[in-house]
Length: 166
Ligand SMILES: Cc1cc2nc3c(=O)[nH]c(=O)nc-3n(C[C@H](O)[C@H](O)[C@H](O)COP(=O)(O)O)c2cc1C
Image (tube, rainbow, N blue to C red; front, side):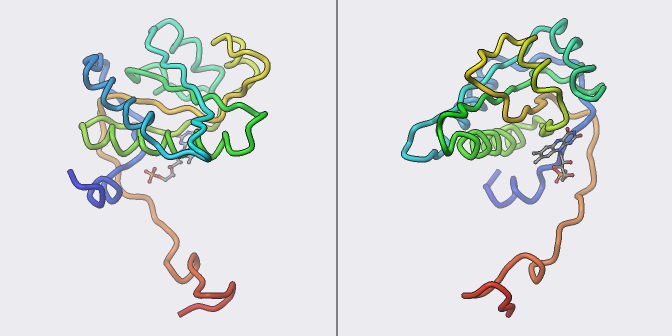
C-alpha cells in the first residue's frame, strides 16, 4: 500500500476481533514509530505496549468506559517527558506513524485521548516525572467504518499571509 492510499483509507477502528498480533507484525509496526522524526532527533518519548488481557480490562473504566479497549490486541500508551519541550510533538508523530503502518498491515487503530491520566499512569506504573500523552488501540478490525468528514481546503489553508485564500 502506498502512503497516499494509507492516508486516504485509514479510519479509526472501534470494533476488534479478539486475535493476537504475530510478534513480527507487531515489531514492524513499532519500528515505524521508532523511525519517526523528532525534534533534534531526541526521540523524547517512550511507549508501554499493553498486551495483558486483565490489564486491558482494567483500563476500560479508566478510559471513559470505551469498551473496545478491552477487545483490542494491544493498547499502546505514549509517554512524554514534560522536561523536553517537543516531547509531546515527538510522541504524536510516532503515534501517527503507527496508525499508518498498522493500516498497511491490515490492522486498525484508534487514538484514545479520553482517559484518566493519573489513574492510567498509576495502573501502568508510569514514573512521576513522565506523563501519558495519548494512547492507541491496535488490533484486527471487526468493522469497516465510513470516512469522517473533513473541513474543505478553503477553511484550512492560507496563501502567503493569514487570511489570503486562493
Ligand atoms: C488526540 C486524539 C484523541 C482521540 N481520542 C479518542 C477517544 O478517546 N475515543 C475515540 O473513540 N476516538 C478518539 N479519537 C479519534 C477521533 O475521533 C477520530 O480520529 C476522528 O473522529 C476522525 O475519524 P477517523 O480517524 O476515522 O478519520 C481521537 C483522536 C485524536 C487525534
